[in-house]
Amino acid sequence: MNHFKPPFYLSHPTIQTMAGSLRLRALGCNSLDKITKLEIIEPIKGIKLQVAISATDTCRGPVAILLHGWEGSINSAYVVTTARFLVANGWHVVRINFRDHGETHHLNPGLFYASRLDEVYYAIVKCCQKWPAQPVILCGFSLGGNFALRAALRLSCEQPPGTKLIHVLAVSPLIDPEKTTRAVDQTGFVRSYFLRKWRNSLMKKQKAYPELYDFSDVLKMTRIETITSVLLKRYSPFKDIKDYFETYTLTGSRLAPINLPTTILTARDDPIIPVKDIQDLATGPSLRKIILSYGGHNGFIQGFIKGAWYFNYLKQLAHIQKGVEKPI
Image (cartoon, rainbow, N blue to C red; front, side, top):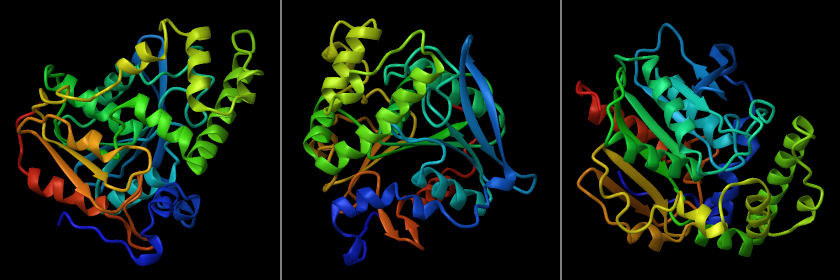
């Protein structure tokens, strides 16, 4: 099962990485549209996040909660194609937009930071509680994978009522933000992609709250690390970028306390998440690492028709966990 070799024309890590987010994969007849409802929830008083709920009366399978990556959204190709696949197999699917992602910049005056675990965590709990009798699988991609792992850590210590989270899957999760930020800045096509997305996001935020933000100088900067440092100094309580990165660094033994069944999926050829970051993680009996030779970052594309390798792995997780009755 844990073997993935894409066709030769999709084997290069750059192609895998680009294909994962390629809009073309999400085009065509979208079976999600007719059954999806957008809702605004308040995971924490005064904080608003947008969720997309795709469910029908005929769905009898588990619930999947999907977390996109940085500057992605509920409409990112890797999120939409995963949701389509799961809905077609009888699942309920919930997609959560992080603050300032998608078209949500107007919902909260404060900026998005990867340190904002509380609002994402309580959004996950609220979504679980919509189906208290249904088994739930949480799946996060890239930075969403980092959020998913931090949620798994927290859920290993807490037992929110009305939840039945049975597994967490982190796809290409960010482990060391300092290393990854520098890798992005050193990888031309990745840096260009994120700069374009982030600039568009900052312009939307400035338009929504012109009295709070002026990013005119920031929009001219060309390195992710530099922009991050400037924004933190100007708008955040963090003393510097290292202080900020520490809030979501997961290196060493930080994930060892996880006692909720959790899987990390990564690729040796990931251009921005060093495989050593995953290999060096100290893990407990509940945390499994799957390291594939191919896949790039957030890719694992078997073919444009076949979809991603982890689609069927998600199905397998639900099958393995079938009959689990004890909530977290």
